[in-house]
Image 1 (cartoon, rainbow, N blue to C red):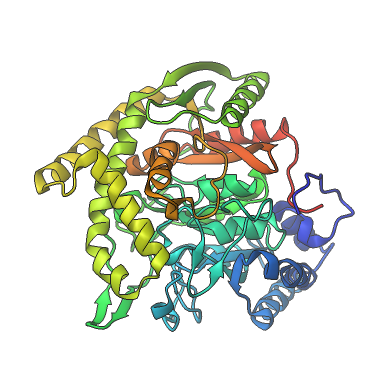
Image 2 (image 1 turned 90 degrees about the vertical axis):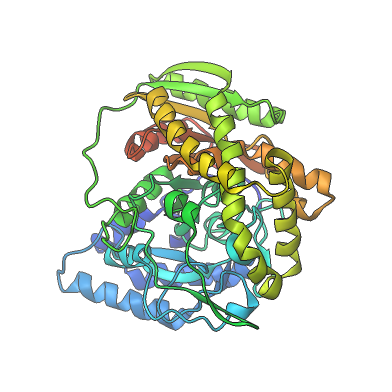
Length: 486
C-alpha cells in the first residue's frame, strides 16, 4: 500500500466515493447489500494489516443494508447517504456496542442508545459498518491502546495515522469505508485525515450535535460519572471524514441536525453568506519551524487557490493563533487534570506517559500548577480572541495554514524521550489554535512526500463550512489524486 492512483468508473464499489454510492443506490444501479458486502470484503482483506476497525459485525451491517434496499424497492423517501457505509468511533455511543474509548475497563460499557451524531447519520441512510480505533481516552495524536491494539497508517506503518480519530482516517485510506464519524478538540479529525490523505471537517461548535448518553467509568472506588468539562462542552465537535471534499460535505450536511439536548447546539443554521474571495496564508509561528515539505504544500495550495480566482496574500505568523494555541494548553490541560486519577487507575502505560508529557508541555508555558485566577482569566481571554478572529476573517476571508509544522510524526513520538515529545505541541499549533475558539476548519491533502500525504488546513468564520469546503474543493480539483492502495 502506498502508491497514488485515480479511481475510475470500473473500480470495485469499496473504491467509490460516498456521493457515487448514494447516487447509484438511489438510481438502482447497485444495491446497498452489494456495496456493504464489497466494503466488508475489503475490511477482511486489509484490516488485519491496519487495525483501523476494532469491531465489525458483518451480519448487523448486512441486515441494515437489506432494510435500505427494501426502502428503495418500496419507493420510500431516501436520505442523502442512503446505503452508504460509515465507521463510528469507539468513543461515540452506538446502541448495542461498547463505548470503550480504547480503555480495557470500559470494554463492557454497552450503549443503550445512539449519540445524536450517529442518529443523524442513520436518518440520512448511512450504514454503520464498524467501530474505529482511538488512543486510550482519545487523548493522543496517535491511535494505540491496550484493549484494541495499534492502528497503522496505510501509507507507512512507521508513521502515525493520527489521533484520536486514527482508525477512522486509516479505514477510509485503506478503502474500508468511504466515510467516517470522528470528533475533534485538538485536531482529532483534521490531523488523522491529513496523515492518511483524506478530508477532515471540524464544524463550528453547535452545528453538529454533541449530545451523547451519560457516561460512567467503573473504578476500584466505584462507578465514576464522566461528565464533560468546560473545554469539551465549548470546544469539542463531532464531524465527518471523507474520501473526497464532496463526500465530506454530504456527510456534514447529513450530520447537521439541531438537537435541544446539546447545551451548545443551535436551533437552526444561519443562511449561507457570500462566498469568501480572499485567502491569507499563515505560514507558521515563532514556536515551530516548518519542514520543507510543509512549506511546499502551502505554496502549492496557495497557487491552486489563486488559480481558482481567490485573492491570496500571506503573513509569516499570526499572533492571535499563536496565543490561542497557548490558551489551549492552559484550558484543556487544567480541565484534564481531574481525569488523571481515573487515567492512573484504568488507563494504559502509553496514555499515562503521554499525559505526563502533555502536562510538561503546559508547565513549560503556564507553570507547574496554574492558579484559579489564571484559569478564569484564560476563559476571559478566549472570548476576546474569538472576537478578534472573527474581525480578522470578516465576511470574505479564509486562512490557509499548515496542518502541522511536520509531516506525519513517527509512531509513538510522544512516548520517545521528553525533548522529542515536547516538540510536538508547538508543531501542532494549527490543530490546537482553532478548537479553543470554536471555529470551523477543513484539512485537505495536497501532495505526497517521502511516501506519506501532506495536507493543508483552511479556517473560516463561524458557520462558513460551505465556503471552506468550496475552497478545499478548489485545492482538491487541482491536486494529484492520492490513494493508499495500488
